[in-house]
Image (cartoon, rainbow, N blue to C red; front, side, top):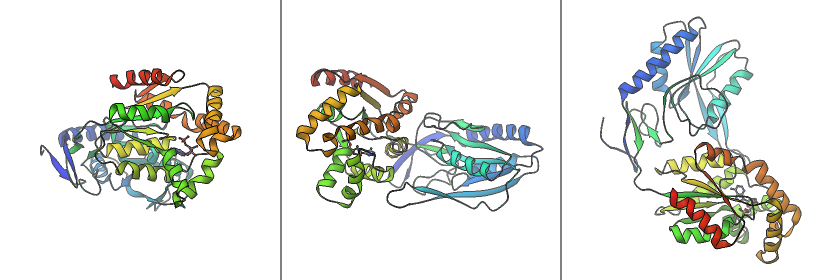
Length: 372
Ligand code: AMP
């Protein structure tokens, strides 16, 4: 195993050797042989990444079985819809069959959840999930992973079928991204009016971080009447969320503008689980991760009063109307508050009392950040 390899612009170091992978596949295959000997299972590999795993699993399966492959091709929907995944390659009747989905890796679980729904709709008797690698920290879905080879932490890996921008699939060992620097990436969280913007301004100086406020970027675009601004305005004026695809693309572009950053303060992002997953992917590809979600906790009625007060001078239409303000708070509880769970599961959630003087609250936040 090479001590270090380079793919495109990134360096990778050894992580899991081939013999360890083979042992893990032996054990997955043993269990499949035991459970499915009389089921004539249909193994369905998810391309491209699963091709090596599929080959190794079916070589070890001792009973009748069939093998097929599918691919999820993502294409862009209209500007206001999210990315859509289209299933291609499913070329046979699967009703009444026992299907085993073979995946190279399960992280958030979006793919296997979507596939399992499609297969059940088509009348499969049983859908089992078998994956070579499983990232429990990233997994957000309920569906059971029936068989997995190796549990791994939330790292970006290549090899054994997995790629970085097309390269690395042919490696027989698995490598992980070498993190060249230690970034501090904070997600500043809390309902509208909790004081995220004010605190971000102080913290960015104190810790030398780049502050990205998605709300500010949208307002800048609205003011300059850009295409993005025009699109976002209709949602923002009603206190609704701008669609994920638009917001995610914008955030990625803002991060890419700052290649030298020591770290970021994300203010107003992520607001949905899809955004959180996408942020994780973006930072992982940079050899980094979210360090913590620090959340300012403030009562609803205090928020409404603060925002109405701010509306007298901020010039923000969404601060001027009590109905819109209450809708923004409702959207926060309906769509955004679930992210507390998302980061709690990763032991990265830190709640901080957001009522008090500005300095006092900065001290509370700093106490959390200094401990990271
Ligand atoms: P803020 O300044 O963070 O209160 O954001 C103002 C408005 O911008 C929100 O009410 C949303 O309409 C929109 N917005 C900001 N950030 C996001 C996001 N991450 N996802 C969707 N919409 C957002």
